[in-house]
Length: 259
Ligand code: HXC
Image (cartoon, rainbow, N blue to C red; front, side, top):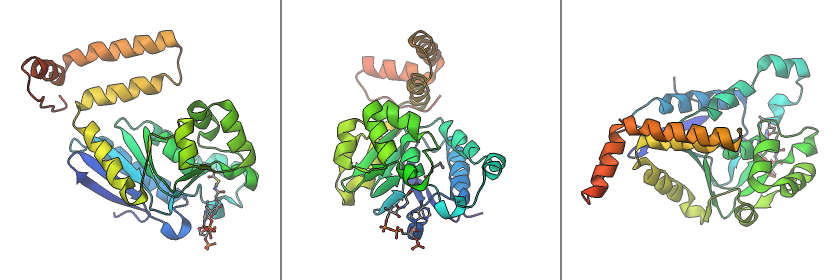
């Protein structure tokens, strides 16, 4: 069935898929249907050998202005617990292929959290990031207090989360929240270019690299180093490792197949 709240282009470039959040009238507010469709699409693309990297964008005005406040406003604690909406977010966190956010305009609340769940963030010069949940009586709920703090440090995260103020693309770059700033008319193209660059790398090594970097966020250095080492050894069973090293020695371009 065709999704209602997202647009999927499975091959925006070779090996690169693009998902666009598509509730423009609501500034891409993340309602349950959108998040479920996004989870389903990402899981399918994650298993599809013709896709190596995924790009996630909104539109020029908004990446996403947060969870859908109108959908949440009347809920009580039991509703929230029973609906278990965060299991969708947990599933997105487990996507193995690289996911790159292309952010223009508002990335607020759950929108900022969704961008931070991606592996990299390319922003247009109009991008604004914020966790304004405090202004509506709650706090970030999809990882904002944890991921923002890890990305920008305690004092900046505190300021954003306690005041709800937005930061500009420039401030986000300076704080280490995003990879780069691109003029608004080029931000999506540039994100797809970055995705294509990664898609030319050996896919198994790319997945294991992602997995290993993410491990750094929830383990001790000792365990993280052991995890990295096992992945490193494991790649010596792949044909792409043989091809990559042979191509280097033969001074030719490697042909990676994900095997
Ligand atoms: C539902 C939203 C929405 C949201 C915007 N809209 N954000 N609807 N949920 N999060 C709707 C508006 O109601 C309006 O619809 C339309 O989108 C356009 O928005 P405006 O407010 O008219 O636009 P503008 O004046 O340009 O202001 C833009 C804005 C503002 C600054 C982004 O919309 C805003 O503050 N939005 C809420 C941001 C926020 O608090 N996000 C955190 C949500 S909580 P109508 O039909 O009224 O014209 C959260 C928790 C995460 O994310 C937990 C994990 C899931």
